[in-house]
Length: 372
Image (cartoon, rainbow, N blue to C red; front, side, top):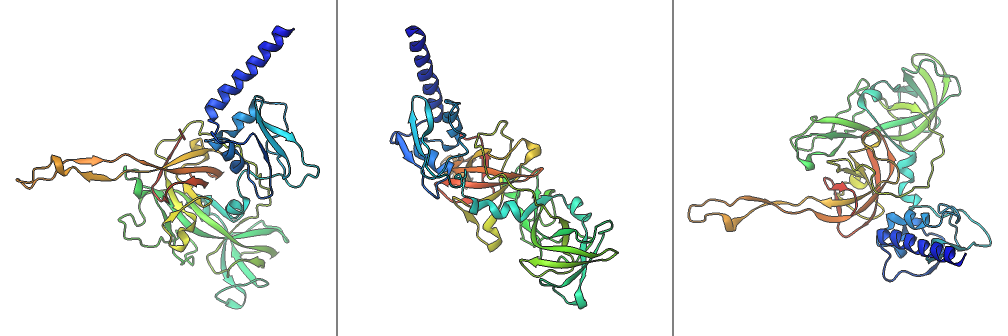
């Protein structure tokens, strides 16, 4: 019996050592930690691990512990030979702490969607506003076409396109950008016009998704073509050309299971920045970015990528012949590590990711790949 116990203990130690080696425990990691309000699973794991996205490996060492997604303020976490587990449960359980800060991603879960331009063309649209006003505010009527079959009392989300995501497939990573669409949504048949950026790619490239933003909710008052809807709430004024989509009341799962990509897609890039709406060209930790890969490319919620900035191409002047006024050969500099991001929402070929950490600003065109 003693031999069996010794063998079991040795097995646990070897198993934990294997997991710990893969997860790389921080040299200064605490052996215990009291969970505080405002903590996140990612932030806590960063106290224990050099690679926070590998925290599920430590939890998996000890399968009989509490659900790692149900960690509460006041819980005492312990790291020992049995892995990372709850050593003491808080007396009063509040809401469990999230994987990542929900305030950073909630707008992108509720207010943004990505679909194809062809799908968007088929959606109903606002043709006019009550008393032929140019804009509608809450409490006003909207007149909507292509809404045949809707039931009186049925609710719809009013959406407005914000980005057309295009991919040029010409080897130029900096060409995979999210072009802002213009404010002219009055072209009911579409397509929405893209703002001119003078980058040589105006209106070109392969559309991989069109982003829309939910800006209001309307309820059907009367069927017909056009149908009459009451604008029940709005975050901005509604105008002709705005589109309608079904209201998505499905609760969102705010629990994410961070993991390296199971099959890292090739040529994955950052194509847009959430604060790009404000003309800002860089982002940092706890900011949202859009990627040119999604569910159809094997990316799912929790997928964690390393971000790299492509190296510049420079001229090797040493190899050049200055006497003959010849420039030297072109040299591609290596990519530089930027930080990590975790995907929290996916569409067919576009996904949203939260920048988790970084040592330099994140830019459009930065590549993403499996973390080392």
